[in-house]
Image (cartoon, rainbow, N blue to C red; front, side, top):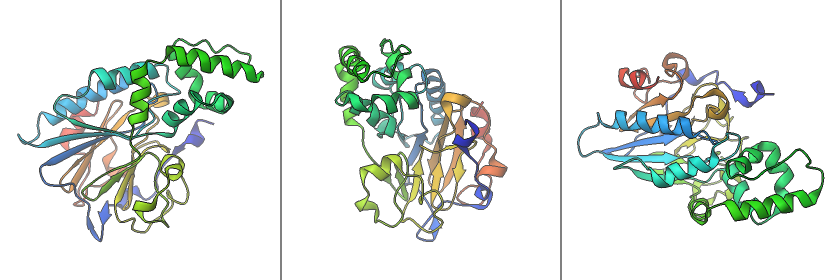
Length: 289
């Protein structure tokens, strides 16, 4: 079951992010740090924040620093509440933060108003989120009234500011030649006509699409053993809640690299830079332990 959740790109080594037939770039003077799916691992988020801050200390003075979280802060890991607290109370200093909505975050919001989604949500990690808020789930889940009680208990225990945080999350963010979303886009639709359903949930035909998408799409949602780099997309969900590997993509001008809480990214086999060289620079390897 666990192996089926991980995807490995067979052609990522020869791919380069491109837009309109040229190497994809972020605006001059900007460095973007994109963080993959966190899923209740506050320990990994704290460590990745440390790595990002250390990496950013080497940037040219005056560089604008932007951190984009691609969503799924909650579920599966045991510290969803603590993840939200960290993002609210201890943001990266001197960074502009963009926080996107993930499908699991939307599930949590939905359960607060619709207890009927409880069985599905709990099956895919919502039970861990309830635990983090001090709501006892128990083993008996056949009675529909149980979910009404769980909903009532959760409403009492979720801080109002956490609800506000979830409601404030954005569906997408765009800068330079890159579009950041949680799951992906529907390739047959213009980027300005995408639906929330696709941005939060899509896998196919997005994952198999090889043609240009107008922007390079940076996304999470689909787990890979390593970051997946293709000409039209970069996937950065490396299954943090199971693997201990929370990944950050770093975009600076026409180059990209990775930071990781678990191990150096295998640059020779998973990605090459936008200029055709190895994506794993010495700096990214040094900070990726």
